[in-house]
Image 1 (cartoon, rainbow, N blue to C red):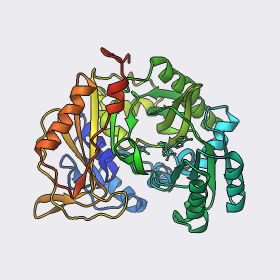
Image 2 (image 1 turned 180 degrees about the vertical axis):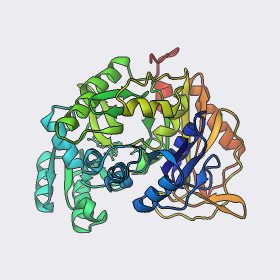
Image 3 (image 1 turned 90 degrees about the vertical axis):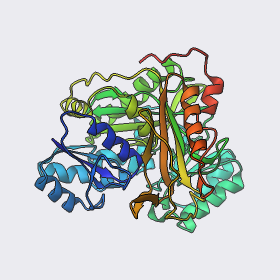
Image 4 (image 1 turned 45 degrees about the horizontal axis):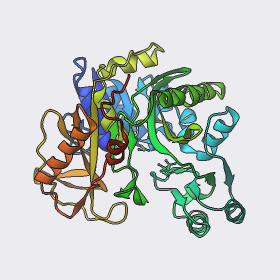
Length: 427
Ligand code: AMP
Ligand code: GLY
């Protein structure tokens, strides 16, 4: 069968790789994809040009379409494909609202008792500022709509919080996404990402992972789309993960059914492990980036079988490889601010388990050059997290990555420092 993957980033490259492994797959198409996706046939249709995508899927006997980016989901790509009689993996725009509006997600959590930070939403900047002055710092300010992971300020002082409100509500830096803001309690604890295949009430969790959202080492500097990840998470107890599945993912899937927004696809909970247990910081209606790049390589099942089972409400019996997968993102220097494009990629020597996954790249004279903020992620697998990370950093060092690129030097370091020796994840 032929499969169409929608999107152009590292997450989608990872999906392409995983899908291409299936013996049942003839051709994987990627729209628009990127030049690093050598396993796929690239189709130059943008993620949001749904009519063209439907036309392509029909004329090329595409059996399944898999959607990466949230914008396409929010625009209703799943609704339109289904109306056209095509199979597509992902939530409808009604269900994807769990990601599209933070205020909506918060209301669902309040109504269904799903643990999350205390919050208020505001459409008036004066009311928002008064609330911040009343609550004090630290406090978290979030633009209501989509802002590519950058619409969140964790303010350590009241002044910083007020400035964030000005930027979002008065200077409209995030456009309409910042017309409404959610202000929430600052949660302290370890962050983790938990994704699950969901279909209506049915929830099949993937292994937990951890992203690194800030640009600089030690989790400092501005938020990015994610600078590195690893899976599973060795310093998270089995009870904490169980608690997140039973207390967060399952009730959220059920809530969406009750609200007549039944979810099908990947539901992603960004959580913080607090003293009182796991609490939600955000929901996504899709695979996480870069979490997908470190979770999918450990999945043993055939991806097509999983999609078919999930869609039919059958337990896909997920199986996971032992050991760890980690990935370090190599970005353009200057990201998430301004950066240069068109720079020749360093020559990274991959092998069977050390694999570059491409994102912001294009071809120039038959060579890959940079074309975005996050350029590629170097992933590796190993028995321990320590050796996995060491392999990645050694490979990057050998490649002599020039200073026109940047990568964090401390991905997974906290996990390695704090994990119990001889740790084994029970799947
Ligand atoms: P989000 O886009 O909602 O995932 O937020 C981006 C980042 O801000 C998260 O990964 C956290 O590091 C941080 N963050 C968001 N909400 C909170 C909160 N309530 N308490 C502490 N940190 C938060
Ligand atoms: N890694 C966070 C996200 O995909 O939104």
